[in-house]
Image (cartoon, rainbow, N blue to C red; front, side, top):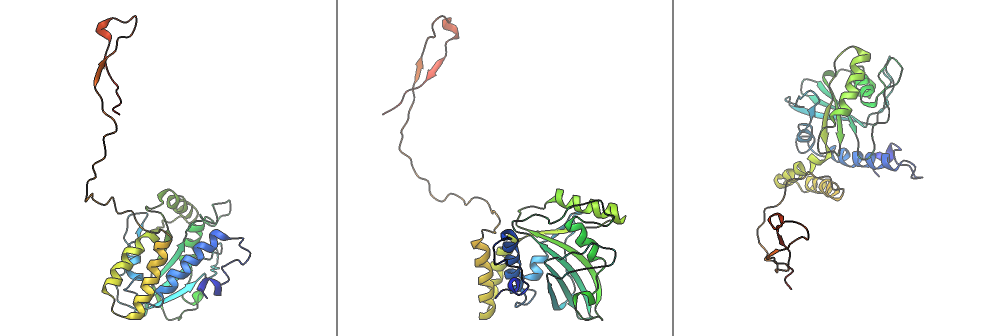
Length: 268
């Protein structure tokens, strides 16, 4: 049983195939991260993210605990409700928490666009709006946690940031809330190299199994980055099928000075 099934995210009738695919991917990958130390996969993956405005997502504090909230329904006052895929809470030893709202996509696009209402309604703009209003209590976490930072992270299978899409979401948020926002982006495709590096260093058998399963899933889905063409290590001599010699051809009615050397002879 996956976390997606627990939350009723899989349609038995097959009516929401694209959503099922991304919910399963989110469930499988982030669900596995729950059973691994954060420094193995989660933190390195978060560090691959960059924001629309060029900022790096860096977690410098010592993290003592990770809170996971899958598909929470957020109904902040004055905001259009939303349901992000995951909200992460990276808790430090002094009980502060770095809040990271994750919207993950695989095949499908954004589920909502800007409309005429006064509140942000584009999916990312709406989630950014709720992100700045929610508390740890809203997520069912300890009320004494103090939120240190709030980050919206957009995860897709693309090889580069979807700048036009992010610009559109940020423009609505800025226009309707009269304040600047930022959205971070990363790709599922950054994960395989992180997993490979973790597997090389891993000595715990149970961790190795989880890391290996995650890597196998991503490779099966083809979620890797293009790393260039492998250098040629062996040259192959091909047989000569065609050769050529210069032949003079005179076109009727054209002065000899304008005729050209025409090359065409098949070698059999």
